[in-house]
Image (cartoon, rainbow, N blue to C red; front, side, top):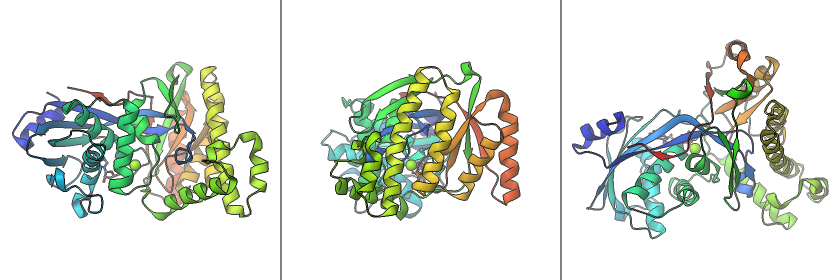
Length: 385
Ligand code: ADP
Ligand code: MG
């Protein structure tokens, strides 16, 4: 029995029917594009969230996480209401409860269940612990109740849980990455069609390493800034007469920008359109085996997020500038921004130098020490037991 299954048994006094896992993710490039129907290129982290689960017949759901101090949260399936998600210490339970709600709302035959969660994905670090929790829950319920859902459908339901039940207006990239990524690959994602391509991304063979630098600044996506960016993109698309900013061809960017009066909106649009282009160029380079050459695109992407989209923060900027100065091929903030993590593409041999440079720079600036790990593209959601 896995550790998570054993904990489930101790907690609930019964054996779980299975254990499911879904990973956190890092986005290589393609940031703030998903709610513009655009492209992204995430990969799955080795860190993941496990959910041990067993069905119940009485319409009750019981939720427990080894990662919180809240005890078991007990909810009545029939009474789940997005207007009243669990509050206070129990608020974490909104993520799995939201998945039950989204499945029911899609008229899928879900009944009660006991769930126990354990994760090594850091929370609030821009590595998508929320999507890992949602997708692991969704996969568990799909298996428990024999629901014939594809991975993209699971991801879409998980996103709906976060949007409509938890109340975070995120795009679908995180859930798609967690549900669909495969080991050794980045996932090229078309967030309009949910079409996916698995792009070989073997850093080790190329003598490269990906460093994930968690700035320890907790982002709060539910905060207004994210919703503001989203709203301003949607307004800009409307003003330009396109369904979404994804429909603006890169070649026509200057012409489109000239039609927008507000300089702030112009910068937001420029980020989205250039970022989509960077995703496509990065994919081409990966396919050609020219991994190092993706570095400058990462750093350009960071500058665009910092200056045009204005979602970076001093700690992220410092991590990126320091990693690049210490020899990274390129680096950028990853995830929604306003904190969270940066990603640096480095030669494997440069790891000690880059780690030291970033840690020293944070100390000198008086920031909380960053948490630096190296990541290799790992498997997406799976059943473990
Ligand atoms: P991120 O997805 O970048 O980690 P979010 O703010 O989107 O950050 O999601 C973090 C929230 O998700 C946590 O505050 C918590 O409520 C919930 N969460 C994620 N993983 C777990 C877990 N293993 N146990 C309990 N809650 C979790
Ligand atoms: Mg999240």
